[in-house]
Image (cartoon, helix red, strand yellow):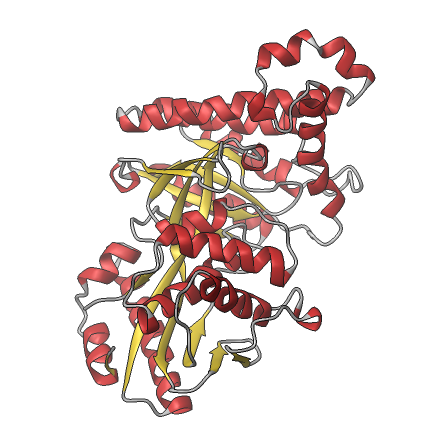
Length: 427
């Protein structure tokens, strides 16, 4: 830990190399970041009256390739982004974890009580308790601490605010009580454990891995308990393109059956072919069996299985293109992936509300501006929410102006892939 005044001095000195790595070179953004951190530190001082503490950051994530492939043991391409959740924390020499989050109710958890609580399901305290329980189960130490958190990855943004929060708690526990020795993958797996068993959401592992590990990564889920995570050697900041995530609106509340149908349809095809997931069959197996599959799982399931096979293999080719510096080819494949999601995976709009098609509208406008110049695709689960675009700098203002005119001011997030996952800030 460091003295509070030392942290404030380093943040406010005006030329912070670490902030440039995390948030880029734009002076206004660096000033905004310094102000945000300073406000959080001063809030921590006021609430807890501590003299020493540590600063932490955990990024949101973006899915770049492999749409709905992870739940059938497929491959994905993902990255951590420059939009993050931040925290300041210090030990309090008790068993109580006390967290003040900007804009949210206070949290107080007894870290000796690690049993799931039914009345905590679907709440932030359940994630904290789940992280403590999961890490203790693995033999890590956890005691009481005080923290102030600024959750700057918006909920519903498609950038995995919950996964970012989980691994933020994990990195705090790692450095305050375990000498920073909790492995990023272990942190991610614990985040999934907390979300599955305490929060009550049966999520996969891609989001937590991308937030914890950081940078541009490809993940192979052939062995789900031990996924193969590989860093991809490519720097998006050198391309002259911006990564723009646009929130097209729409309510996720009534989409549970739509989301559940995707893995269910895919696995029904696999089951009809004598397998448990689509990773265990080939496209040729599926094509040969189409007459029988049409009588069983049906056409939509076949189309979704076709999408899986294409996108799962496309991830391999996207990684190869990036590693070879062929960004043009990567962009072409990102567009291919988007079309596959639209035509075959059919997760662009809900079948229950055909008048509300914000994602499709956003994709149409993106194609109008970016065709043959950039890339655009659905981002994440689909049906409502966000789209992703790679926008050349010369078209950035036009793109954001057009999209925000349709979806509202602040609906576009202009981001980049940052190389750091969940970290303790070292000055």
